[in-house]
Length: 96
Image (cartoon, rainbow, N blue to C red; front, side, top):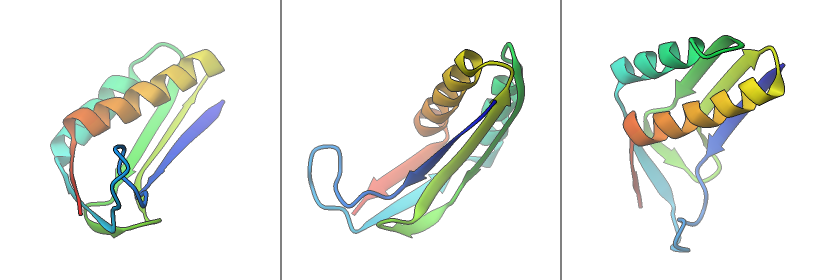
């Protein structure tokens, strides 16, 4: 089973304020650490991620994550955990 996440810049923030651009900084060393940790999860065959650093406009890709594994329960759980961990520990963003 393969599942993916494609995060894009939204036109509004979570609190409803308009957003025109998103400024993204990425700690590449931490990206590798998170991916390697997720690859060791039960039933997971592969995890890949790409985060687009710099300035991104509304509608542009921010983060792509793909997880492959044996069963959907393992794949979906690992995909969600990977995205959350990357957003919390690796990606620093500023909405403008």
